Length: 402
Image (cartoon, rainbow, N blue to C red; front, side, top):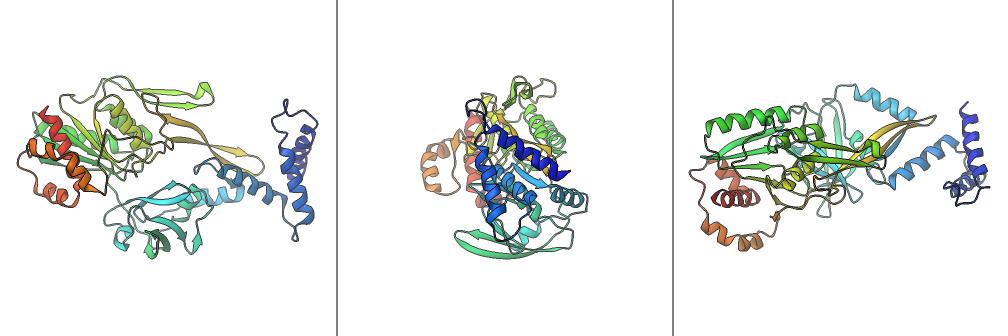
């Protein structure tokens, strides 16, 4: 049956060559059919036609973007079986940028953190196998393992190769952490948008705002937040926006376009300024969250330009060969800016390096604003180690004084 279907496909391709190119957009497939014929006729070893066609589809998708890929039926079945198994974690999150797998988050106390893997490391090998020409989903699949299983990783850091041996563990990562910086100022870090993020964030803020009868400012840290569940990001943004568009989904099929609106019910007070701190590893759901607050002028974005991942994938069965995961739409900010490959620009740039330029730029602000009162001792330690965070808080102090 499979052979008959393949012959029918090739027959239909060859028949299409008889039509003028202006009438048939698939005329260029003649090159594919001729190449397939030449490989089968002249290649020294016999190659299965299914294997060649699967390889051609993979190559075609690889040209589109990092998130579209193809799995044969056998690979898809293996993936489904393994997905149902009990897995541990390494405590890292990765993203695909410029055809490289980059570590965007390393969670404290995780196997990766203890081994010395750092944000910005480029993942090049897993279990001795190169990740070159490997799709993003395949790379993520390769760094999964059962609790107690060992894995070897090789990364590139500042042009130097570094090898690590890690063991998968049960990794529990909170969706948010936070603290009171000083009287009337609150800090919250959203590590990832998980299924409990909105609930956790709402609970934390309501408690802090009850304690602080007159909050003067909120600092939200989404650095190294590589995304997660978009719905949770939208619900979280809705806490601060009472009306209007939160994000727009656009595709080539008009019926699939969507607009997500804010709801007034449950919105927190707008009587205090918000500063969002992001970096080049803030991606996907965190970019949707940040762009909503920025476009509605509910927050001032500080830090660095975000990653630029704002696409949606759907899965299609492609009989008889396998499964196709294809990008079908893109997220846009409320004002219509596409996030994919462009990222979100901060209102105030605070680079991770080259601090002297920032100090010079903000010197007058540093001298003019108050210190924000008696600070939490833990916050003081964080500021000393993290000048980017300190500068973001300085911006919040300036806004609160206006």
